[in-house]
Length: 223
Image (cartoon, rainbow, N blue to C red; front, side):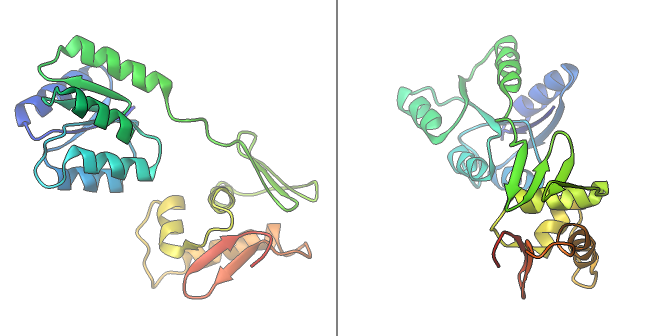
């Protein structure tokens, strides 16, 4: 489990990082709002512990950013103890709100509770036209015919069908499937899409993977 602590008091951040690491978690820290934003943009976490009053971007703004990205659990850890602050934090989407000074035992109990909840379960079966992808069974069929894909081809198809009808840029696809920064001089994405098309599109009259010139690719039953 990965936890991000965004806390400008270095002693508090070090104390939390040490305690949570000893409890078995992978913990990263950011000491200001800008570094927190970078970590949220670049890496995935299971829980984020946020101070409200931070240099640069405050905790409210970072929470909005987290909520725009998904359902990562967020706990506010702050000296702001006014009822209106607690209400604001929870209404913005925080999962918990703990006021400083705090008991580490209580914080750890709350962390464990939030991590037990976990994010909403991922959709297991996707279908577009006659193409069906069963994520848990890693089974792909079209017109009820089984299609065998490599792990990389499956990851690419899973990405495309989970964002059906949405144009995905080559750089986004590269970052999600290969965890790499896209180099415009490489054609790794185009080659992979061509191979995937050969299996799920070429044998069938209706094409589902479409090229959007100058932008990327979209999967859907119409261009």
